[in-house]
Amino acid sequence: MSCRNPRSFRTRRKSTVINSRQLAFNALQEIEYNQAYTDIALDRVLHHQKISPRDRSLVCQLVYGVVRHKRSLNALIDNLGKKKAQQQPPKLRIILYLGLYQLRYLNQIPDSAAVNTSVELAKVNGLKKLAAVVNGLLRNYIRQTRAFPGRGNLAGVARQVAGKGHSFCDLLKLPSDPIKRLGIVHSFPDWIVETWLQQLSLEETEQLLIWFNQTPAIDLRVNILRTSLAEVEAALQDAGVTISRIPYLPQALRITEGSGAINQLPGYREGWWIVQDSSAQLVTHLLDPQPGETIVDACAAPGGKTTHIAELIGDRGNVGACDRYQKRLRKVKANAERLQLKSIQIQEGDIRYLSQFANQCDRVLLDAPCSGLGTLHKRPDIRWRQTPEKIAELTLLQQELLSTAATWVKPQGILVYATCTINPQENEKVVQSFLDFHPNWSISIPATESIVNNFDISDGWIKVYPHRHHMDGFFMVKLQKTA
Image 1 (tube, one colour):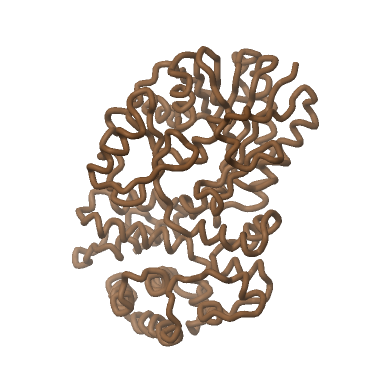
Image 2 (cartoon, helix red, strand yellow):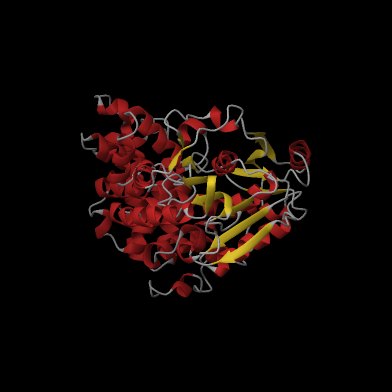
């Protein structure tokens, strides 16, 4: 079987049993060999598969879990096996990932099941001669950790740096350097750990890393032009969905259990709600759009903030939605139509070359392309794909987009700059550079009654830390043109 042909992961021998672990193995091959994104790889292997919702959930849990914890799993293989992880045959390494992930992180999987299914995976995927290696390494892990309860309990690494031990850490043979230590235990590149440590204490950095390794919740934004929060809440509860309200956000509900297929939930077809993280909803409240205004969402796709703007102005005004790619704008249009919003106009094109908005806008929202480091729980690939060099290139684009968007704003108008990252290089430094070169702009402090004042705005901007606020990491600042 060619490891470079994605079709080969889906077209297997008839004798192969297609079960949840096999499907996870197939998806991880696509990710490992073809650099497929996790969600895309899962879509491919799960497409048309007739498996139970429980098995489908396990496939997703295994794939996302392995991608998140790859550095930790590599360290385990390095210390348990005769060969280092990167010296193992690629297919064998993936099977070891799956076995170790189940043993380390999934309390609901018996040790025997984790071992036996991993051995079987080796046998049916052309690695029969290496099945004993899988069995031996996994059982070695069990032997070395059997005396220590608390599988998956990784809290306290910051305290371990001060000298206290931990079975998992001992097994990993961790270095004394706190950056490398945190990076290995929580499975992040050193440079990301260092970025957080420049802003937070050692203890808070660890809390943030733990948060990013949790399975994300699903947040909804209720369309207040079609229904009410209470009505959607009741409809979802009647359908067996466990939900909660989110403090300070008047349109937000969080699904904590029992969602199933999103498009099958009550109110989806009727346009009662849209999936949107809480911190993204906060951005539009900072923008504070008003009825009758001309407002442009400069990087609009897939349309969460665009449609939120339209809702907050009662669908009375002109809301422009810009994006470079027609395919992405189709999502904006589809969301607007499902939510039955009429005030949104689609504009395809790179905003750096759109001149028709110059001095025409009361408010502009620039949710700029960024590293996405505030969404690492939802998009685990990012931690392995992003680099400091790529981010340095991004900041140049962000500065250019911000300068362009500023030309669209009328005197006394508002521009909100936002990113889904908590990296100062893309946030504070971009904004400060803009202000240094644009003396007719300044930071605007939100009105006293604004819900955004429930968040830390002491420096003039809002920085949402996930472990503090239990939502995506975000940065947002409100700027005003003084002349």
